[in-house]
Every structure is written in C-alpha cells, then in structure tokens.
Image (cartoon, rainbow, N blue to C red; front, side, top):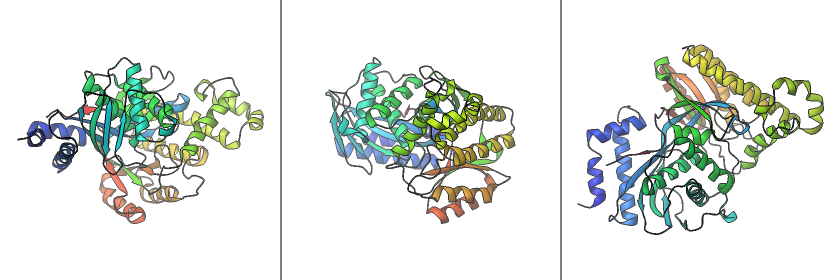
Length: 427
C-alpha cells in the first residue's frame, strides 16, 4: 500500500470524521463530503509528486465580516468570524528552496524561495503571496524551505469571503508545519499575511481579513494598535437564535477593482491628514462636523462621507457586541441594517464605476423578504461580490430559491462559523 492510500484509508476513522465535523460543521453528510474532498486532494498530490515523502494536510478558513465595514485600515473596530469554507493544501517538504504549487483551476506555479525580495513583475499573482509569506516568516525568525503543494479551495475568488486571506494564512501554516513547530501565534500569522498582500501582491488591505482567518471563531478586534491588536472571542451561536448566515454571490467579480478599494482608505486618511493624523481613529466626528467647510476645500464630498461612515461604523461595533452578549438579537439585527445603509449611502461601496447594480438588486430583494425578521448588508470590501444576510431558518429555503433564481444556481451559501484558524488534519 502506498503512502496516499494509507492516508485515505484513515479518513474513514471516526476520530478523523469528528475532526472534520469540528472544522466544517455537523450537517448531514458534511464529514463524508469533506473526507471525499481530502481523499481527492491526496490522490492529486500523489499523481503530481509521487508518494515517497510525508504529506501534510493544512487548511485555513475564509472569513465573514459581520460589523466594521472598512474600518480596520483606519485603526477601527470590527466584528468578524472564520467560516467553514477553506483553502486546503496537501503538501510535502523539499530538500531545496524550490516551490511547485498546483492549485485546482489555475495554472501551475514554479518558483523558489532562495530570494524572497519583492518582484514587481509578480504583483497581483499567487507567486507574490508565496514569496511574501516566506519573507515575512524568515524576518520573524522562522525557518522556510521549498515545498510541493496540491491545493483546492471552497473560498471562491471574488466571493467576498476573502480567498486571498485564506490562501495567505494557509501558506503560513504550510511553512510552519513543514519547517517549524506549527505553533505560530495567530496575530503573527495575520500580520505576515497582510504584509504579503500589501507589499508583494500590491493590494492595500487592512488587517481584518487575515486576523479573522487566523484567529478562528467569532471575534471582535480593535485595531487601535495594529502591532498588538486587541482580539476578544465571543461565544454566540446564531443558530440558537433561529438564524442562518447566508451570503449571496451576485456574479460580479473583484478583478480590476483594486483602485476602487484603494480609494477608500486613501480618502479616509486624506481627511485625517488635515488634522495632522495618519488615520481617522485619532480624529473625532465632532471635529469633522465643525470643520466641514474647510475640509471641503481640500477633500472631495465623497471622502467626507466616507469619513463620517468610519466614525459611525466604528462606534457601532461595540454596540453590536454588547447586543449579542446581552442576547438582544433584535437590536443586533437593527444595527446590521444600519451598517448596511451607511455603507450604501456614505461609504458608497455597493457598486463601482462600471455601474454594475447586481449588489443593489440583491439588497433590494433581501429587504423585501427579510424586513422585520432578519437583516441584510453589503459584505466585505464591496463593489462586487456578495451580500450578507441573517435569515430566519424557516425562511432560508425560500430565500435561497429566490436569490438563486435571480443570480444563478448556487449563488447562495449558508455559512457556519469555524472555531479555529489555520489547522492541520493529522492522519
């Protein structure tokens, strides 16, 4: 029996099935579907690279942003959760610095980690993330080396569930498992991942996505000090409120929207600069209101509205947390709707310059179906991609049917919250 057949056989054990349920949920057939997915990936690794070396199985989750829309990059507060969709890797160590990276549905990547400096020609590519993560880990005192990886992901690109953060955090897990002790603090995983995305990939994201993926569970994060963000785990199960978290992928792509994303933190920081501050967390809404006349001479009206959104949204997050902790789910849902309206009206990240109105339509449909019973809002960075909806469980089937008819088969995904970040399934 070769190595991968032995691993696949172990996927049938009850211990392994229980581990899969902890990562992906205990829905009917979930463990069996995940076992089949893992088995297929192990076989793929064997076919690509042979079976002489140890194969490690490393997973990292996507994330859902629940509160704090576009606040992290200006040192604000967020409410977020890791989800039961993930980037999954079957990987083996090499005895050199070469990397062979085969991700399902994408061209193969072959590179090396002998030089981990930024390469301008790699901007916007997975190769840039591999190099950036390796460089960050090396600078943090961790060993790095080459590897052969077969990768699959249920966090679709452009889905608004942060496929990039899942991939980056997975890569920290790969190098940590292969060459270290797989005990990297999750905050360091997040910061290394964010740096790779900012400096190597070229997308100026905040730290929300990577922190939620790396930390796991439902968390509130205060980014006042980004070198030591304050992360607090929350123990709340939305299923006990009779609610499902449903994201709707409207078919819009995040491709070519980097400039739209980059404009939001740039405009917010431009307003802060009037006060000699680097970001809005060090300014007050009262100051902004008092100085709006002078500010308009130096900033666009959109920049000012985005700044007002920041102040209101940042203050809204602790209110959402308190409502959850006190069991006031109705108040919490009202705050979600307030957040969504602020993003739509003031942050203006529901549709981009291409004037695609699919997200606006999804929000319109959700309000008609959920008003008075649930909540709806733009999800994540915005401009394209997904909406987040809190749907009463007895209405989920009808909600999914309507949205799938509008935006295509499988537009809806019912999410579960994953309790851990980067994880290794040991067989």
